[in-house]
Length: 159
Length: 159
Image (cartoon, rainbow over all chains, first blue to last red; front, side, top):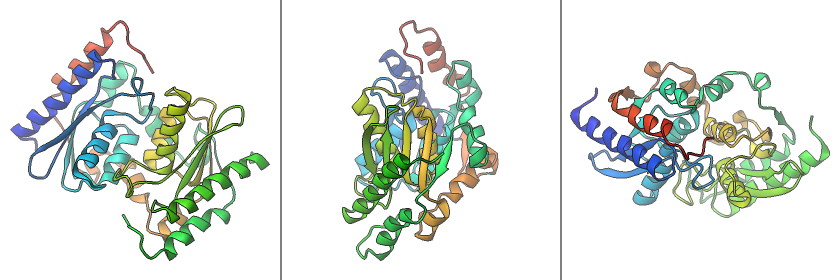
């Protein structure tokens, strides 16, 4: 259920997206808030600016929040994104263990300014051999070696 | 079609995954090869080591390759991954414009050592309101402001 403070934090993400455009970034912003309601960090899309296709606002915000908190888990945290997350960012949100998403603009709104992730969502929904992007498998046995090494390692940090 | 050189590059990614385990990283490696067949970079999973849930082998390799080439597009490049990419990495691969994926271990192999992305694939396939992770929308109108600013910007770099 959206509360007044959700609107405050989402507006911060939206303001960051506007500032991003003015500073040569993409029109996307995100903010991450701790379970206590503390704003941990704000990020924006820097794909072209930092020559990094993974530098979406949400990924940048997650990376900054984890660096700030010193953890790889943001369980209990909320992410506020100026726009609905793409599949990459949604994957990052799941891996970070974030507990709630609040967003403003829809994927359709983004598509109207030529930022469309529909193709990626459509591809992910297809069986591997039906996707436009060729994906092939080999060295099935050799590829198990790192997993065996991992399984047998005693001092590993699982996640 | 898998060729001999594909096996050479994939083995490099697998070797990196083994080395990663020995160095405190996760059991995953990836290599990126240019359209000319040149190895551009190798990456491994550093999620726990760098406190970054987005630091999967493929994402790390894409970031390093883009930094090395000085671009945000890896069109024509091939990514070799010791294991089938998760949805986050697959999204990153699409955004990077990578043209081909070659991998070794399957998602099922990874699940056997407790690295499962099935939950994320299942979630992404569901309608937003049926997912386990709550996602809510507000400030629909305010969130259009960055897009309008972007649309009207004359010197923007589209991608």
